[in-house]
Length: 229
Image 1 (cartoon, rainbow, N blue to C red):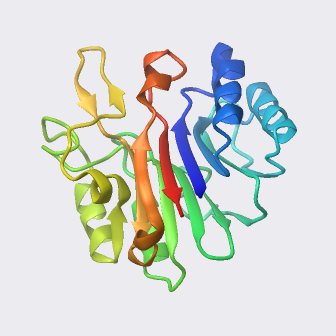
Image 2: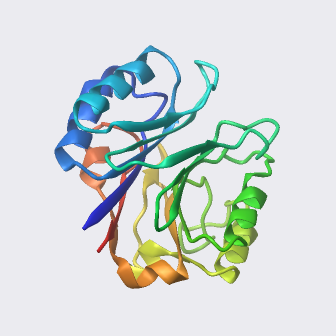
């Protein structure tokens, strides 16, 4: 079994950093994608801690130290790619790791801001290479992934599905009400997703959230795990 974990660690991890890396190394997913990663001293400590735990293959961008970006860590070798042309304002928000059988795209999409990153994802979806797209999409399906209809870019998610990609969580769990982030008012939103190419669904054995990590205060987002095997 191969596990891919994606997690918004909230503003680089801060004082929670050691607990975050401890949980990651205990779970020992083969691939870890972190969003709201920051390319600063906290980021350096995350890289060092995960390297010591066997994550020899790492990909980060040259984002500014105060910017929220993405990092990919793996126990398996991959060819890493940055995508500086994906959006002129958010060039460090999408990274990709090319493995032999598929490409993992890790992302942190801006919340309720205009960007072109979904168009970049749709370009990837049109290629012949099967992708696994994971991270904080800051979007979802209205009235399904939240009670109301405040999501932007729902149409882009529908276009992604039309191009042969499936929401792995919904594929396994149907229309169950489950959320990865909650507002101070207690409203739930499923911002974090895993989209899998249709040719990989047969080996997608499960997709689920680790809500206890959020409930323990390690981040305000629940990590998401995709199991392949």
